[in-house]
Image 1 (cartoon, rainbow, N blue to C red):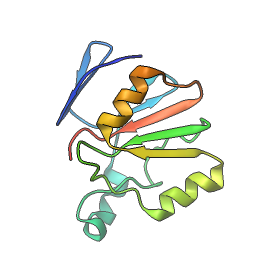
Image 2: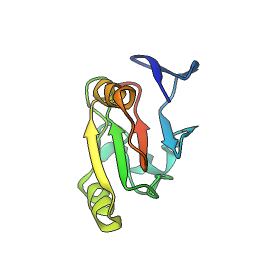
Image 3: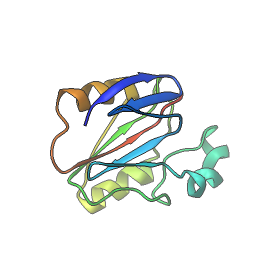
Length: 117
């Protein structure tokens, strides 16, 4: 898997462009459905990533790209859920995670990439 290009609001992975947040689970790419997290939007001023979403917990690691400027909120209760499940959580800006993916995405690692802020 290779991220060909990332810019605010758009990411191209293996030649396919996406204009929405993406989840990479076991090498498959799908749209992040953030609807279940929207009730907490006012709490953070932005829709956070919560465990109410379809989170790919089945891997040993979960990398989260928090956006161009790192503004995707990842609440403490989400981090606690990762700890409870024994999932190693890494959160960095999306450009940083893209660089890590292109250098080497370890086996048993799933990814959530926020493509805007």
